[in-house]
Amino acid sequence: MTEPPKTAENSPETSSEAAEPRTPTLLEQMGGIAGLVSSTVPVAVFVTVNVITSLQPALIASLAVAVAIAIWRLSRREVLQPAISGLLGVGVCAFIAYRTGEAKDFFLPGLWYSAILGGAFLLSVLVRWPLAGVIWHVINGEGHAWRQDKRLLTAYTVATLLWTAVFGARLLVQGWLYNSDETTWLAVARLAMGYPLLAVALLGTVWAVRRAKRAQHASAAV
Image 1 (cartoon, rainbow, N blue to C red):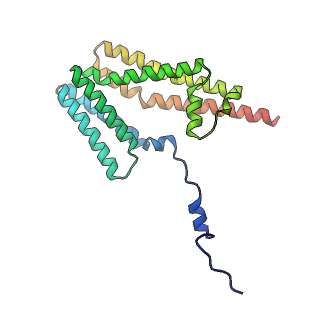
Image 2 (image 1 turned 30 degrees about the horizontal axis):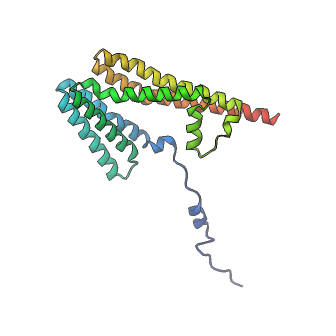
């Protein structure tokens, strides 16, 4: 008696193809290391050209580089979100600097951004809805049952305060440089306090949450 031929429905290959696709990591969603680097290039170009020449050529150069990066990523069929966000961000910064005629105002939206996010993270702690926990569980498609666990709530509160400190430090240092008209050092601070500090805050969040979950599992096992 011959075996029935394998169909596409019951073949192993089809089963593996039907498996749920892997959820991209946060770094992958941001375009990987190349995406992070490319989002900082227009800022570096703006500062360099502004020091060598003047404001208007610097604005044109930074916008041109942002557009070139977006086209390059499109041609390579890579994640466009970092390039598009960078292009929009550079466009807004360039518009404000062009309207005021002050090179330092290129960095003004970044100061507003830090002030708003720092205030939002601090407020979320005060109302006991720490944003680190809310964002973490939204990204992972989970609910808000974590708020009933004291350890997790404490961990997310600590993590949220860490994010608050990051945005607060940005606002304090870069705000002082902005008021001192130190445009070049403001750009250096913008780059140095960008992704490196975000990486520290993210690692701190992961550490705090994992430690709380280990303690939770240890208590449950007793």
